[in-house]
Length: 587
Image 1 (spheres, rainbow, N blue to C red):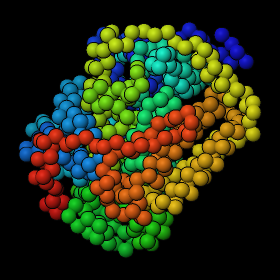
Image 2 (cartoon, one colour):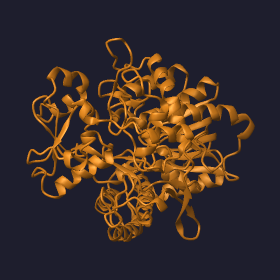
Image 3 (cartoon, rainbow, N blue to C red):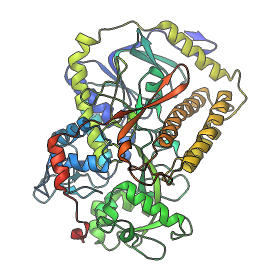
Image 4 (cartoon, one colour):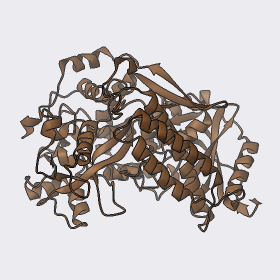
């Protein structure tokens, strides 16, 4: 059918379960559903196998105990809750720590090329703020290895996949999500999907910042915006992890991740004076303290004038044997060699970069269900497991642990709880008509969405970045309100319709995520984990709770707090015993 010169089809593409997002979390859920005989369709923005998971370099956590036999799931859980500063969902943490070993062994059995010990066991390395060596890895290309394995397994199980799809709206009938609308990113053709359940597995929201470890068209908060507009709650959005080490050059690679594996293999941080400054900030844990601690240390060294002239600190692993570095960190060797830097002989220039959103869509971790019937979320799109700060290696574990759980649950309940419901064709027509208005540029003042995206990223970096203040956040919210007003005057200018629509919806999603981050950060009058307020520098027991937000018809974004659940006795016992890593033992 044509309307206004733009093609779309009101005959929906139907499936039992529609998964929006084709990274590790979405694919693991799809594999489980397909194995149970459920028809599943996975939608991705990129070429199949090129999801953001490939950028997760360093490793995946599981208390296998291959190198440190004393490790066990309770200690993994205790490390996770301790470094999450006690606002994690304890249910999610227990599930993650208990289930991770089985999921990692499953990946191995499916052919994931993990690095092995001389005895043929999965090798494990130290990662920051962890009590034992529990991070399994495939060199420093772990995410790439995992995703390749999951893509092959999904293909083997007959999972259907569609590339180049941008989902712009979730559709509901009778209060239940039962489909989605969007467009083909190459042809611009409008697309309609019908499903008994929709799973959001579309990543996080760190691309709202000027410097980030994601590609600029990823992690724009798509999943959060779709869920928020459908009536689901967002949770913990103020907690944004800034990885301590991102590249500072060249242009186009600024912010690109320098994996924590460099420090896990013995990398040391120095300022421009040659001082190993972590001795001042964290003498016990040094470079392997939690990411928020190391990121703030790097930030302060640079801000206070002890960084390099181009705004960096130095990460050095040249004291290790060159052959060892090339074996353990091949991607980093290659990444810096392209810039003329031999990391086996000279230091890397690094500075903090926005890396991971601990917040996301509120879900029940036992099922992946949101408060909206028919809508589920998993992976970085979902909140709960990480609390105020994420342990490196837990995000990849989260994808396969909760992807499997969600898939199993949906396969069990589809027939009983989620029978097919007809799509709301009127809502679909209205949405497609709105897309046509945007495509035609009617009512537009001709503003380029890319210019507003750049402005938004600067705004977040300056007002809601590594270090925050109440005054800065209030000014940032004022600027955001002004920017939102101007976002209503967008035009597509001289770009193809599909490219222009992508930019507009990226901006719309980023605005939702940005508002949730800043309003949550302003409300939380304390410092906890990755959220640091200079005007409230201490952690406050009264704020040991979660901030949630949802859209209400009168007033827009509404915030409230909820208490954190009780920590299970087995995990509390491990917390009380304190299995802290003695970093100096490694040296």
